[in-house]
Image (cartoon, rainbow over all chains, first blue to last red; front, side, top):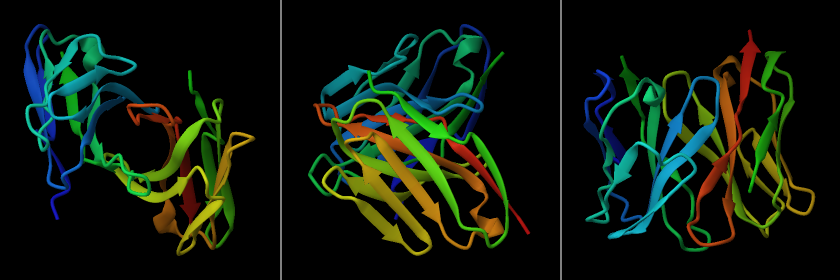
Length: 114
Length: 113
């Protein structure tokens, strides 16, 4: 039972570098999300997707991009890393059917930008 | 804009005590509410999901209630144990399209032996 899998678990980036955070789910969920969590804070939504080929911005999308070419995968791209993007990133997925909308989260990617 | 508040921000109790964590939200037009547990350095584990038409959900020593009209939910933990020490987060899902979750900032619980 893999659920939601994120890679890598940890990463250190230099300012201006780029990287892609990978997220895949094996539950055939149509909804997928990217959140970031800063120390002592709740989770802020970066981007989300309601199905393959459809993405939309959340609360804090600046500096990030996403794509959803398949149901399973929802990668998050950082183009020009900045210290303000130091955070823990969580990917999540869920169904959109009534009674089955429980959200499942990955274990997170801890990113430090120096 | 939906805002979710959790009180208290931190709570320390002796083992065996019954306790209540509070979650309030500003927009009552929610689809459902979900309680999560987060251990230090770990991801989120779903504890309970309450649909907007439900009043409460129970799982073992956990009971979550929902009063949609007043914008409140509580998580009741019976007979607390040191293993319950973690941060507890509540999140509400909007009724409108997108099905996004809005999170509170969490309550950090410490249960002392």
